[in-house]
Image (cartoon, rainbow, N blue to C red; front, side, top):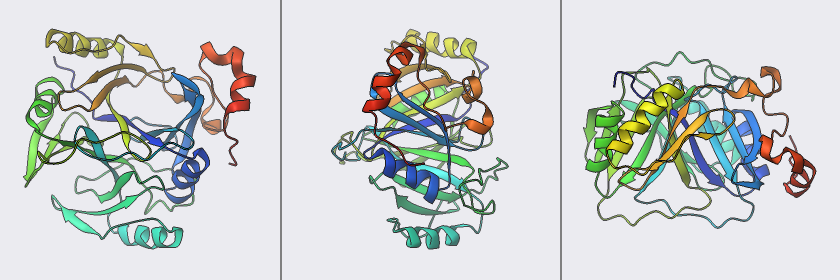
Length: 312
């Protein structure tokens, strides 16, 4: 197969309060809400999408905010850290911003020749701001109160924690076209050369760590990017031939999806670039209207009544 996976498309996590989640990601991190819709499998729950101005693949972090959900536990068999790329020399800005906002944060540290700042969202989701050594020319969203010289650019990397990395690494290298570039102890960095950004997956081998448990503050799945449905189906056929249990193509309105659980236990998705987030509302209105999939439109009044009210 000549078409490589083009890095991370989006990452989906689980939250508690919808209002608290919205306020943190738009007002503290300064991301744009690019889509306000519902969980297609549970329309009584929101599905929020945050990213840059256009919702470019590789910038999109999405959430299922279930009110009152019990907190989860990070561990093996899941994505455990989300890394955002930020401009060099911007980390002190974020240290001060997080202090002012009461955000739980760690110390600025170095890994693989890059400085990073670990922090947590209000539900305990683990994130990092990383001053990328690779360069990043993506245009940030500056409408959320963070200046362009400090604003997040989109994903730098995602970290998966596993009992053993070998089976997962085989999917990354033999199927997705990633290569092992660096190693630091039990952390192995895999990178695709198909794209310059959102191109890194770190695998952490932790044979003695307990298995993770999904709940508030944990990741649900990681989606990898392909340009269109033709390429997506090539990957489906390849995975089927390997004996992988993979779903049929599912229409998510803004992209088409395939899902499978990789051998280490992490739920993977393969998502298309098309048709994008402006398919049902113009660029200047992204995220301002509640958008429903066609199968739920007839129930709009009841769905809107049951959803938590948001102050935006």
